[in-house]
Image 1: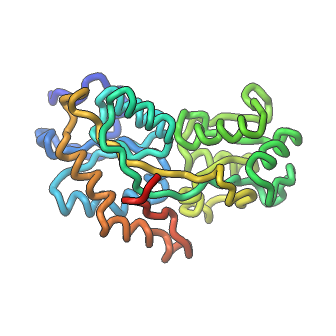
Image 2: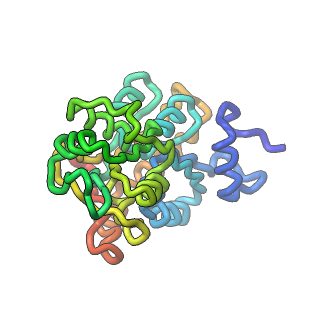
Length: 278
């Protein structure tokens, strides 16, 4: 039996690798484990980028799409080689404790507040804090990811900025699921929810949800790539991680990110930021 490269990881990693078709005997040095947020997967961006990276470099990427919080936890344990995440506070904590190196800006989009067309809480057009206050006042159902993801972290910040603590309220429900699945639950229950724009646009035709609050500066959603520090975790594939991070910030890939989604959705799902100041 092949010895797992990271024996401390849970069944999730083993199942993900098996589903991805990891071949017995494949050299570990040619495998790059990417831990990332579900939005990069659900939006279809990784389906566009990873085959190109594999063709160009000969590496095989094994993607573990979880919330940013879980992805960062994998980085802290050395259970991934490289992270593509969007939870700035947690990212900075990872860097401060010495488990990450070379944190680089990749792209951004924004968060949007979604809800049913009928908008029972009357939040349409309000700023984020005011919209959440209206939802709470009307006891309208709000679906939270509740999964320690970057989106969940941002949502908690927004509730705090609105002066509210919704946990424990009957109208505030948590799915514990990724973005795409949470959107499906919110659509089924005609609830409000917070989403990144890219995932929403990719799945919009399957949903009955509308954008009700957007454009607030508090809704900015920034993605970074971080290599896991080999000094702390010597088993990581350092060359593979660096190759993937360099690939994401390369001019060609940044152009792809700039154009991704325009043909299908009429607007890009992400905006390239490599090389720009924070």
